[in-house]
Image (cartoon, rainbow, N blue to C red; front, top):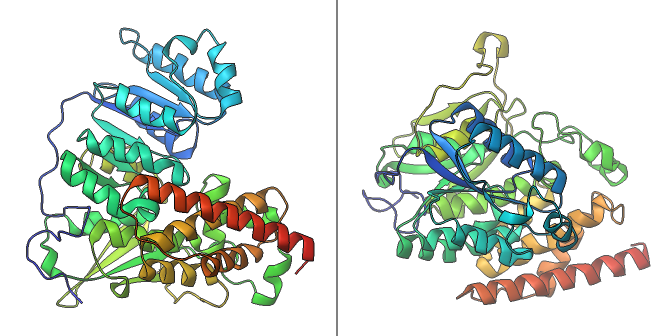
Length: 422
C-alpha cells in the first residue's frame, strides 16, 4: 500500500521532501557512546574535518581511560577550544572519572540523568550523535528533539521503545532525525527529493549473520565465540548477537516503520550475504532504487551529521567487477524466530515493542554472561511477550515503567529456565 499523500507522510519521522535544518559551521556535536564503535568512527570524522566538525559533549559507560585519551586528543586537535562536557553513566566508573584531573572539571552526573543533562547542557551544540545501545538512548533523544537539534540516530531503540514519543517531540521542537543505521540511511538516500505518494515498499537487507547456512538442529549448541564472529561488520557485542539472531533486523523493521511511516506489511527483509546493497526502495510503478557501498559505517554517519551531503571521504571503493554477482534470499523465520517476533510486536503496538526490546536486552546480557544459550534468546523474548500486555504509551514515564516490568519478567523467566534446565 503506497503512502496516501504527495506531501511528506505525517506519520513519518524522516521528511524526504523537506529541506534540512540550516546549521552553522563548524557543526558542534554531542557524541553519546564516544568509546564505542559509532562514537570512535564519529571521532575519526571529526579528525578528518576539524574545520567543519567540533565536539561539545561526550559520554561513555565505563571506559574512563579511553574517554580521557579522547579528551586529550581533542585538546591537541582544538587547542583553543574548551574541552567537551562529559558524562560517565556507570556510577563506579563515574567515581573514577571524578578523581581524574583530565576529566573532573568538565564532568556532569552519572546514570541516565547524566545523558539527559549532557544534551541539555551543551547549549552551543547543533547535532546529537546517539551511538548508545539499548533503551537508555531514548531520553537523550527526546531531550535533543525538544531543543530542535539535528539527531544523527544510531540508537534504534529510541524508536523501538519510543517512536511515537520521538515523533511528537520532533514536531514540537522543530528538530530533525536522520538515520545512521546503514539500511535506513540507504533508504533515505533513495528517497531524497521524492514524494511520499511514490513509495510502495521498503526492502531491508540482512547479511544473515554467522548462522545463515547453519542447520537449525545445530543452533542449540553454537558457542558464544561463534555468535560473536560476524562475517561482515565489526560491531559491539550486543549488536553482534542481535545480528546473529536477526533480532537486529527485526528492530530495524520497527525503526523503518517509525522513520518512514509505512505499514509493516510494506516493509520487507531479504538476506544479502555480501552486504553491498544496504537497502532498496520500491516505487509505485515497480521501479527499484538501491544504495550500494562498502560496509563502512562512516559513510552513513557522515551523511546524517552533514545534513545529507556527500563529503569527500577517503576509503575503499566498491569494485563491481570484483563482486561479480549479487545474491538475495528470503529469511528463514523458523531458524530466526526473533525476526518474526519483532514484526508481531510491531503490529501489536508500541507497548509490545518495548517489551520485545527489554526482554531481548536482558536475554542477550545473559548470553554474554554465559547464563543462556543462543536459542534461549528467542525463547525468553517470546515468553516475556506472552506474559505481558501491550499498553498504550502516552509518555516517557509509562514507557520506562513498561520497560522495567519487562526486564523483571525476563529476568524471572531466565532464572526459571536456568533452574529447570528446560
